[in-house]
Image (tube, rainbow, N blue to C red; front, top):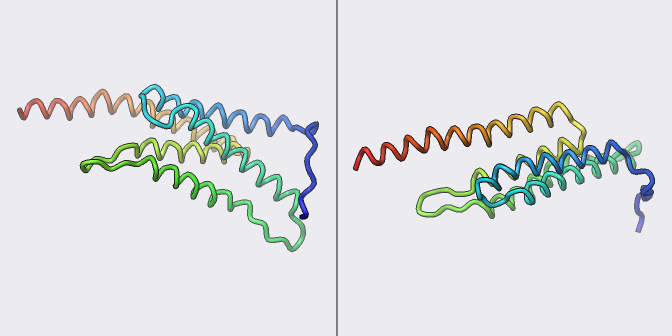
Length: 163
């Protein structure tokens, strides 16, 4: 079996450590919202998904640069295909339809978001990581609080008025 040359441990790159570390931290922060609300797929799930996507991305990019030669047809973008398939399987298992009501849809999308932010961390796309993380926090936390405060309150209020 022919393998690529191993990378010695003393070659640990601080950029790689930063990319993976940031992915883990952002994944944990994304999961914090779910954890605080008592939903499934909390801290550990989001942290692991985001970190794993970053590891997979760093590995794919490194292998591409390590093994690519003139005439090879390697495609590091297949990482998105693999990640999308895997996260889709996880998300599909989370989504439950019961009595006409869909549950865990936000959790499933949240996991997909963690994977994509992990890929961006692994690729070192820092402006994209920053914008995605900020938008995610606003959409998931701030809008979640606003929804709970005003929209759910209005639904409950209209139900009691009708009685």
